[in-house]
Length: 341
Image 1 (cartoon, rainbow, N blue to C red):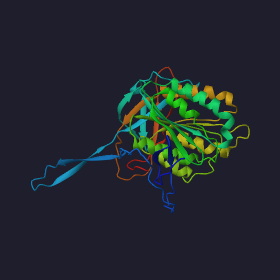
Image 2 (image 1 turned 90 degrees about the horizontal axis):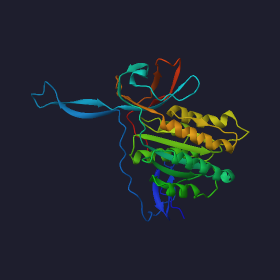
Image 3 (image 1 turned 90 degrees about the vertical axis):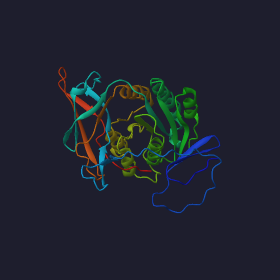
Image 4 (image 1 turned 60 degrees about the horizontal axis):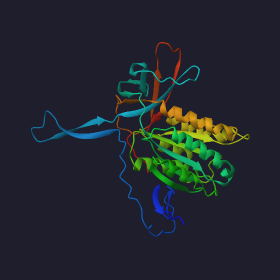
């Protein structure tokens, strides 16, 4: 029996399983729930504030007056570069890149292209229509995990109308495989709720710099409390996760079915894939693993650290001799200075 704790995107342990739920943002009344037998205390998230105040004495402080100097927090981008033949380009140096925020050229403050560990959330649709597909999906996901850095940490969420955290952060392959097999095919598809809850779980448990969410579903969202716009707003926070998606929507694929997954992935620098058959899933999983392992990490401090928290656009360009045209895929922008829960 699962126990739902009626707090937005909170994780609770009950009967050896964990459930992630997102409650109505409008605070609708729901029946009280007794406290669970044991719950992990949620660490306070590291707020991705765009500025950090530090006290500094001014030149006119004879009267003991202090002024505050604001230090701008570094924006971290994870970027994939391909050439005009869509081949990965992995040998560029810092001088090849130009970063623009709201159209203004920014100075790159940190850069590296070596493989670094990631923390990855695997979100798999557990609705009734996935029954015949699950074994193939699990095999492909395990191949992706095995291709990862041994220092990576992964958690597994199975979602239908509710989202269950069946394995928290771990590098143990046996535990991850057991979590993927923990299937109770039923219910509807609350995709946006699962994305929001998983994003909050990442923020509440800061571990590694690079954060990935992989969503696998065979249908459109039909049960979430959260909206597509709310899910996108969570993902677009400063230094948020990169989202990859595999949409198993079959031969009846419609633009309306693909649009949500495409927009969530592209805004974060990820990719949405829509295989026509299950036979393609293994190759897609390998492609995602290569993509993750081939990214550049680029940091900059905005030259115009304005106080508002409105959306800021990002554009990254790459140029180097020997390549006629390079395309850089990274997040398209971010909202600074706020933490959503």
